[in-house]
Image 1 (cartoon, each protein chain N blue to C red):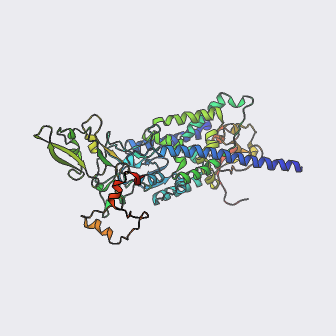
Image 2: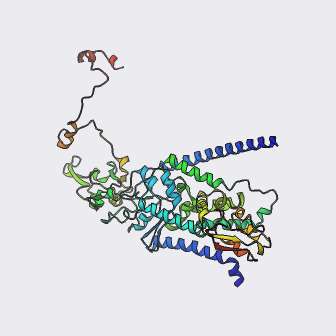
Image 3: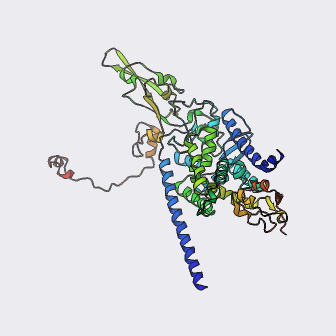
Length: 263
Length: 271
């Protein structure tokens, strides 16, 4: 009798260990798959979308934004699309966002993954405050940079004159023509993609990238001395002591020492 | 004809419910119908009443998402609804994968796969509860609703409403798994959503009752039942089916020729 009890205990422990093993294996494969799928971040979300990580955990994948879009711009990622499954995105070269003033896709979101506040100014929906992405121009393939007159993107831009402006400069090659090149301004561009949709080159020479991908960051240590507002950041600044001492040697010595003290 | 109705009435009703829900969702997307919009993860009825998958909301909670009032209310409505009519009524009356796995188990019976000597069921039906726990752990670690991310149920419903892509592969895989690997494998062993609704269904009022006096122990009910362990009392005792794992699919009721099984409301007072 006692022996049987002992083997019961052994079996129980073995079963538990086996369960833990299988769960660990399953959890590992599961997490690895999710990690891979999450990594495809070169995609454009509907207006008002939270930051990508928060968006992925908040979106419940109901597709109400897709149904609300009158232009069939938005799609839900299907298996095989190589995008986080079931989440909404758009491809501006195919169908751009036409920037409806009432932004029908945002208020229908039940989960808050599309945040009304982030596309509102003073309590009113304002599609111009959307930040879906940022247009980037490839100066090598954009024919305006070759000196050919084309302002397709400029004309297509719904915030024409603010998000895209045309800059003139002399075309030295011909000596009598002007370059009229499109310049995108990140402060105004919403990333709607109408420019990418309108671009006349075989593959769009102006295209929308997620803002995190397209934009650099100067960092806090640069201050625009000519900008009164930016200057204000200096008001509470404290002196920072650097860890390396400034060399007491004469600069001439350093120049004459070969490259020795550089290495 | 009367016999056909008598033997398949619930099955026909279930298929009608399952398919019309999909049609309503599809119409909501394709033709702007307002009856039901969204999909099984979250939807709006008549542009008013929110409904959302409580298990998906639970995963989002584990993932650290801020849950909106709409989703909370929707999850509460769905939870209450399924608590009343039987948690896994979702599985047999709503979920479209049920049609796939029912077809697989029908094919198993036609091909007499279970009669082949040496076949056994090597897996426990409790796997689903472990997958349920695991899904919450993975959600917490990865920061997103883990099962929602791979769920063939959501994949297929979304696919039928918004465009399928490779979603059909999920259907094929589940059919083959149920047909060849494990009887009632997906719905009865693996699916954590079924596990979740099993837990909710413990409180359900609508129950199948067994009347032992009429029973001839033909065991037809156990053959068709996708969760045959819940019918342990058949031919032994007059008892209601109290396990939350019962899907209230009512196949047992309609295959019974002896009127030994039927729906009734659970009495609140225990005798």
